Length: 89
Image 1: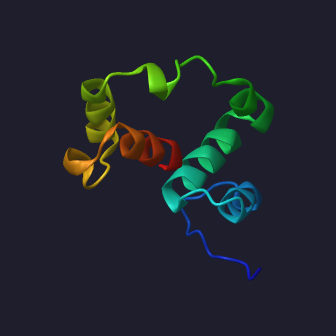
Image 2: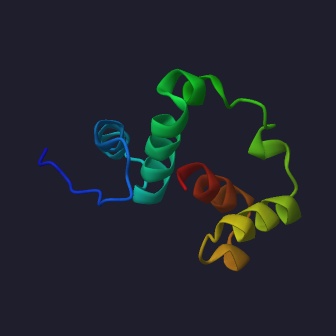
């Protein structure tokens, strides 16, 4: 796959490319790549897993989280669509 230019704001180009190749959004890949550049890949990799499953959340809670991170079209989404949008963001 051709090399993408993530721009000057991405601090770990190699990790950014790997994440994009895995199908992550540009925003998510940049966020993870920058966090790993600042704190180290092992530190960033050891985090996570502390949040409950989205399936256990109420639709109102899912809408709130989607609003926090700016997911477009969230007001018309059902629970399954909100979960998918949150996971892929």
